[in-house]
Amino acid sequence: MALQMERWAGSKLGEQAHFLMVCVDELPERTARQFVSEYNLEHVQIGYCGSQREYPTFPGQLGCGGLVIFDRDGRIAVAKTSSFNEIGVKAWFQADCTIATLCDEDDEGDDEADVALRLYRDMNSLRRDMNNGYVSALKGRDDVRADSKGKNDRVESEEKKALGSVPSVGHDLMDEEHEHCAALFQQLDKSPSVNVFEQLVKEIESHFDDEEKLLKSTGFGSGQPEGMSPLITHSQDHRRIVKAAYDMLENVRVKGDDEVIRSNTKELAELFETHATEHDSRYVEYLATF
Image (tube, rainbow, N blue to C red; front, side, top):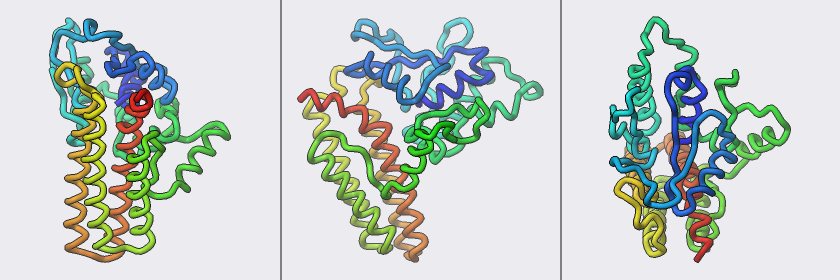
């Protein structure tokens, strides 16, 4: 969500509207600073609520669950846009239309190049930015193209990274389950098999169940106002991925050839890796306190 907000804020829409992110998790100031550092945020405004007394009085939700859009008079125009967790980047296309309309951006004056650059078109481009450090497309880059050796090294490293592998979260069981899933991804990439794909889907589902039980047992996201709990959005993303995984499994069962299995394996790996980057990374420091 942070990267899409940065694109909006750095576009022509950012000249007519304010784009604000507010962190509300257990370590809000640290999270806010981490977002700025990790994603090289320059345009979006970012803040945090130091305590629940500072939470907004109007109903809200975490960004991946939908945005709150205000009109120029400070009134809520849209209380909740479509959820990224449910429909992916399409949610941002819908929000963009609403924001552009409120900004009186007419079709004749609309800069097609600006529209193209300010929106993520697919999960692949979003994932590249998340993993390699954001470089604004609004500065003339179509994708993440590093302008330093260090960033180029990260891009090359990402390309060579083993399929399905994700960073450690500092918890033995979670890391072990992540590694088991990664091993199945890599096995499928080398030797496609319907049975192994089914095993992978069930392993991912089981891992997600274990992860949610762990987070609930430690109180992660508890005590947050309705819609503000990171555990809820985390669980929603689990359900989205599990549904997609079973849809892929059905496709694999029907067609069953090696190319279909490999293609679905890579697609599922992208969902798995993006989830780890965007959601699992947010509980690492929290679990370290136990």
